[in-house]
Length: 347
Image (cartoon, rainbow, N blue to C red; front, side, top):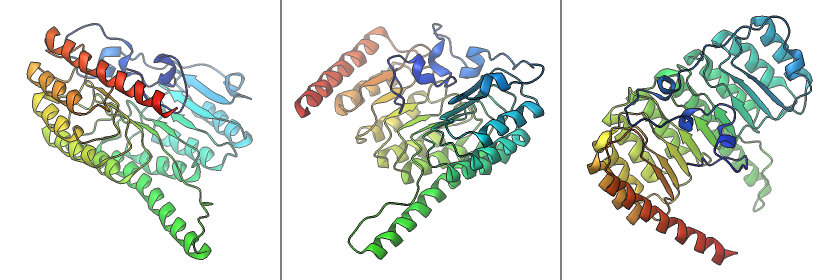
């Protein structure tokens, strides 16, 4: 499945942003608890001395699989503070905890750079970092991609992050209304506003409560296009039903990744019921989610009913017959053909 992203690319690997790890390894049909279990993440390794040669003068500040020391974090902050052209910050699997992130967040808030992407996948950020993340988004409305895969944010952390994102949106709307009142009929959109397009909350240890906060975000934020929620095995049917309710209301999300969750046929039924009336979602990943042929047939009904959906991934990891898989593929092919024809007509 090709994820929707603001960065144009020709391959799925290009869309991984150096760390949106999930769909990269899979050939087994056995159920896996999470993507992190499946991939088998190697702990970050310590590197002696300075890291300045790897980050100075770079538009894309990227360090992966290095256990950053406090002095190395200070070097990163110094580069951010002095630079004005950093477009992305990727510190993936770097042993960053709440204490280290606080320092990095302060540097991100004050830098003259306007980064488009922050990738903190596979670190140790807990709920204590959520408020700082929201502050960074407030200070840097340029950020469009936020990747937090594999951080143990938990329900409280996701709640704080969602509230922060929605507070930004509310402030923007209030300022916009005030500007319009001042200008009369004229619309002057000078207020800065974040346009967070992609959010990765996979393997963040959320349960039904956390999923409820994510659902609330989908119901109230009109910017998000791509959402990854895979590997959150604590979520039960209650959480999936709540997410389904939000998907019925959401009008902007285009790509949703739910693989390696305990969804089952009952959860799929709830999702299908909502997605039948959703007019924006195009790709859905349900790999290793406990679906049988019963759920597979529900997905057939979905793609027959909703021609906006162009791609559904159900294998490996589900007990869906080849016949049912083939029927899903056939209807998706019809949807893609119809979509291509429509695009050609509009040109």
